[in-house]
Amino acid sequence: MSGDTYLVTGAMGCLGAWVIRLLLEDGCEVVAFDISEDDRRHQLIIGSEDRRQIRYVKGDLTDSDQVMSAAEGVSRIIHLGALQVPFCRADRPMGAAVNVVGTVNVFEAALRHSIEHLVYASSVAVFGNAEDYEVSTIEPGERRLPTTLYGIWKCANESTARIYEADYGLPSVGLIPHTIYGPGRDQGLTSQPTSAVLAAVREQAFHIEYGGSLALQFAPDAARDFIQSSRLEPQGSEVHGLGGTVASIAEFVEGIKQVTDFTEITHGEDCLPFPEAVDSASLETRLGALSYTPLLESIDRSVQWFEEANLTGLPLPE
Image: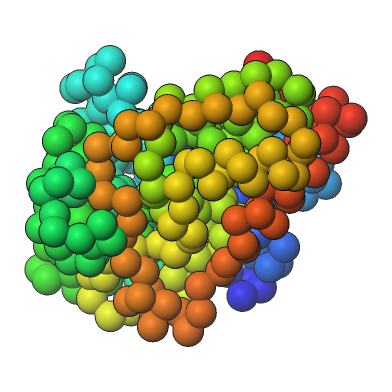
């Protein structure tokens, strides 16, 4: 879609960096909106020449004027900006301001500028504990039973999307990530599988605190599906699960050992407190096909990426 101009919020995060890399490869123009100026993930993921093509905008999602200005002249929006669970717990009013008011500001900017291609990130946190549901892979329309403020605020985002479409005719696509992994993923509880890969590359022992099975979504694949979703013809306020591989942490750890020959990676047994997967069939129907890298191949690609980063001095987490 060469010629499109994208506004990407949460641009400095892992998924934001991958989305921007792929958009630039597609020949698109990018407005990268984030309150942070820490570009270490961009250095890791996006080449220096490509980074010069990005229009960086330091901005606050809670400031409606800043969001409105950033969206001027934009044809599509991928809204990834949010505070994750630990930050929401540390500052609850700020979490609500960024995650709820910030999303309203993005929708309002899309409405005012007549941007009909808007994709936003929901979260598996909108659902309850795994035992609240009868099956391990649940439908994206399953009842919401969030157990955290972060989950409640993501429910509010989905409801915001529904009302903006019903009352104001603004369509959108919401995607529900589960466990994103790969280069650039270095924050939050579900970043531990990626941290384990990096530890193995460094030949440092690492323990993933949990076990069980969960939907593992390779960051470049997730980014591509966000981009493809932004190119759909609008059909109301859609919400879909992302694809990926449903696998156990034990399988992931074995994959690390197989790729790296490093054996000092271990894991706990307790499952994470949410359903192991959200069905992605509806998204596959809409896109025709989902981006997918087999688990072992994705681990191998991550290992190669980290090894190259070590050799070239690119920034990696400690």
